[in-house]
Length: 72
Picture (tube, one colour):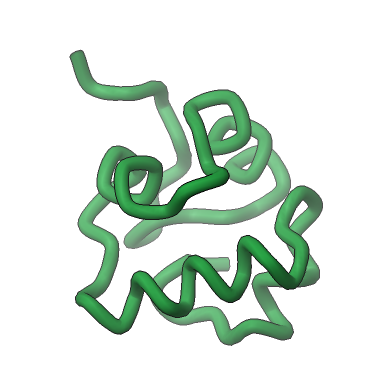
């Protein structure tokens, strides 16, 4: 499930995303689509590198990409 295409209900089905994080993702998405995982982690409070890895394992993608660790 792509973070740039999913609605709140779909995001809420991903293990680790509750209504609060889903709302933050949707609010931040109004400012433009997420370019990559780094962009998502930097823009959404409550998602760090550790939770990004878990969300990716649970099926979340950013522009079709799984989380591979933060860029140096």
